[in-house]
Image (cartoon, rainbow over all chains, first blue to last red):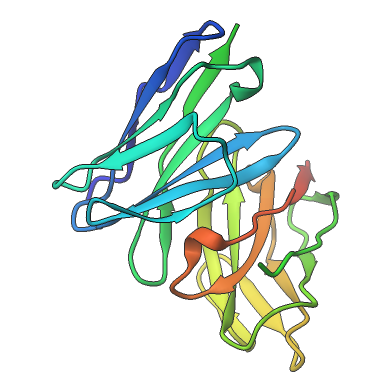
Length: 110
Length: 111
């Protein structure tokens, strides 16, 4: 089985712009979660989608949003980018008791 | 959320056994303990998971005392490629996405 894939792998944006990141889960997995990882804050949970519905949400501002499609693929959007949004954004899909992470998208905001 | 405390970093030499201990005083009755490994610019990779006593797989062992307030990840005979950050997570088996990752332990394996 193919693993979790994320596109793009690297992205450079400027402040005020918006960005959309994409995640394709492992075939058959219906849950997709998003995390932000920075050197200062570590790995923080953003939100989880299951069957096209947001099931859990972390403590991030409304600029961070996501959605999930009927094929379980998910997108994450960040609007009005700030310098502090520079991070590695990780997507994960899971079975009932194991979570599999993708390679991440490295976002740099200038 | 049950938070965890781990050493920030550890050094070891190739061929040695490494034990990384994690403290989780507020673990709930239905919480499981899971360890992940992460290399730079990659997503975390599942290593091992357990609820109590001892769990062993092909890469590691997990020791959990009776009170479950701590756990120890044991890596036998580490190699240079085991240099990575190791995260201890505590959470419900069906609530992965409320796991608290913490800062992890940076393991540095020297030749």
